[in-house]
Image 1 (cartoon, helix red, strand yellow):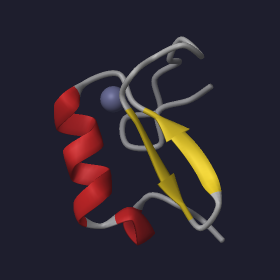
Image 2 (cartoon, protein in one colour):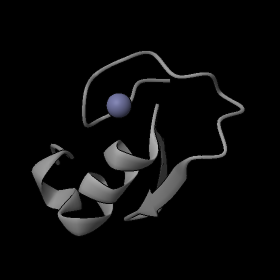
Image 3 (tube, helix red, strand yellow):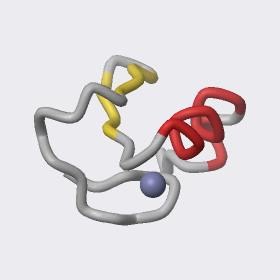
Image 4 (cartoon, helix red, strand yellow):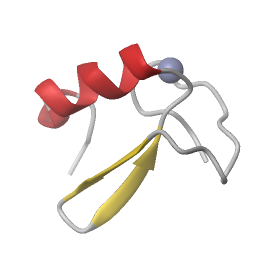
Length: 46
Ligand SMILES: [Zn+2]
């Protein structure tokens, strides 16, 4: 899986995850997750 914020590869068992529009996204760090949670539309290309 890829971290949508920084584009790093992330382990599939990461506990840092958020759901957005029915999809789950994983993050490498809390700061990436917080950035995503603030403005998920910035990171998800529909
Ligand atoms: Zn990241």
